[in-house]
Image (tube, rainbow, N blue to C red; front, side):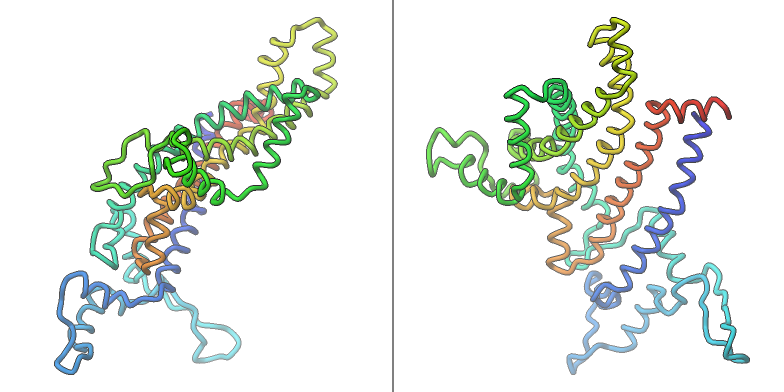
Length: 352
């Protein structure tokens, strides 16, 4: 198991390196001048008497930021001797990507292009607000989806299962932002009825002082929409396994349904559910943009939307990096869980 885990961890290193290089390329495509932003953040007066850029100040900052260096470790250029084969030039570690990458390793993501604040600190603070409602929402989602899915799969012809089927399919067809907006309008104010005013109203919080009760309605919405999809998947997986010949043989041996479910069906269901559940984490994180925008939660989703809307591109980098890391760790967790639930992987590990 240890060797398997090490191999899986080593396999994600090329993926992480590709993500890092993609982020670096993205910073080069951002529609802003890093020199001007740096001078503005430091409060340097770089305009001359004519209202134009003071070229010596600009050039000095350009060199200080290392923008005069080569972009990458090497470059392919047209050959000076032949028109067929290109020429490769090696620059070594003295390049922009190396400096930027070493900054990431030391957790130096730079300063905001708007207010000069530390982008990493701001991102981690916002991520804390996202975790306040995302963690309990995912926990309730997995528990409810598994329980309801098994119940619907065990008794697919019952009226309650059919009602849940119709409800889940109908809910999955509705836009999340529309339902969330209706919930805010009708369930957080006494405007329409005092009996509907059951959740805290959407407000602007000072100094990030958000009571935990404020997250109740966002959690409910995330759980309902996630369960609508996952419970249906669990039901389908349960029905497929229940129709397997080996389940019929276990019933013929006189084993109770509880023993068959706990010892045979659930372990086999987990092989398929591992992928579905682990991929729900990055999907839910991506959907935080809608929830946090509607409920005014200062999490990473709202921070990303705000940074893009005001062209604070330096703030986008740590947010995208965090989302990429969480997505990669979700894939890694899926691979490691396969080693626990999949007997084929277990057999392969025992043979090594």
